[in-house]
Amino acid sequence: MAQFAQALGFTPAEAAPSPQRILTHAQRSAFTFSGDTTPPLIANLLPVPGSEVARSQPITFDVTDADGFGRVIVIVRQGAFEFMVHDGDDFVQGFKIDSTRLVIAGGWSFSVIPDSGWDIAPTIRIFAVDAVGNETPP
Image (cartoon, rainbow, N blue to C red; front, side):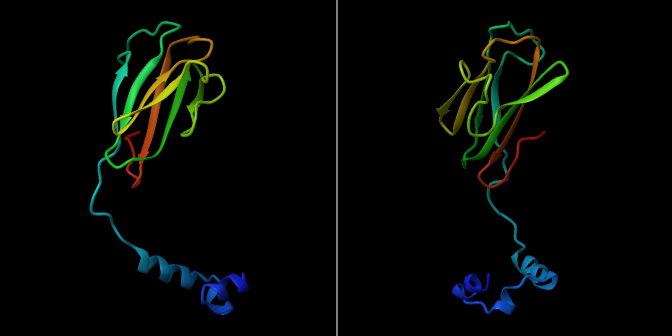
């Protein structure tokens, strides 16, 4: 730690964390963004919420944002079970064969279906965070 601190131009005493030093740094670092305050947009959800879903029917939707994404996570609930379908990077095991994420203007188009089809009617939750931290409503 001391060598790292010296390489950055600090003496070892300055590099040692202390509550006062951290608090002082946090106070000086407080700022707000004056730009993008719009969360990512989730659109074109099919089938329409509340309608029936056939065993082999994918659930499709688009997620877009003008400033780019941090992450999109997709969670599905079937009966008493809830599980992650897309972890922000890729589809998880059990959803890899027919599920897709395609690049579209300003985001992605998702098509979600379990490898073996839907056992019972699913409920889908989509969480998206853009590059500056705006989140889709829960």
